Length: 312
Image (spheres, rainbow, N blue to C red):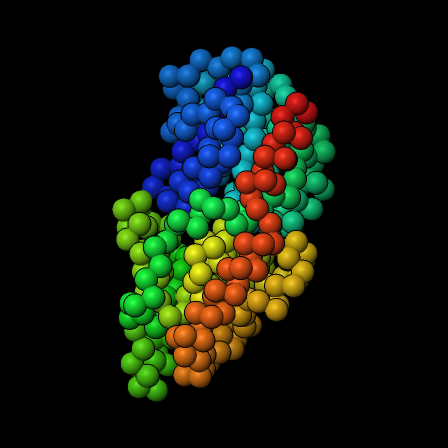
């Protein structure tokens, strides 16, 4: 049995996810990270691990038939409102295997939605809630430098062509100018090509406040893929508030995370800059790191779930 793990090009966050999974499984199994399967001869009981929204080039180069292989899909996007991609992608992947497909999903909202879908009910799928939480590898993601804090506000996430984030960014810029605050405000495009992303992530440790705004008004879920990076690297951030159902895994998040409704977000962040010192913010980030680190360990959870599902 061999395990082939998809490498997603030009997205460093997925490089870290891929390498995290590789580090967990390669201790016991024969694992390989690949961009695609062009030169691979699949054998019975081989395993593919893929990120579904980027799996086309990875899997489409093999024969479209029912191979005797196991497929795991690591979903990283909100799908329960029809965002990003639809469930037909799961249906497409099912053309390549005669075994049950396992989906590991970071959002309980997605899990509940998929379990009610026709594709799930009529095909051979299993879905589990598996958020990307603290692990020792992700802690190496950002090299923290407490001596340099020359960015007052840093946006994360893609801003161009996203109306909610663009509107928020302009409000920050306009109020900063109108009130003569003279704060240094930047945005880090975490969905850019790999070289730019590496550079932009280096901005994180220089930011006094990192801010997180959701893409969609109707899709606000606990963003494990961004929050885990920030919490595991002792970075202070303020997030837009999110749906209650998405955080049943972390019931005491309100005792730790700093959040604000969208309509009051700009004033909330500026007030934090004026009233809280860098040292106070770092103390909060350090406390949140200890809380999140002790909450769960992705390595242990992933391995147990993988072993549970490997023979389904």
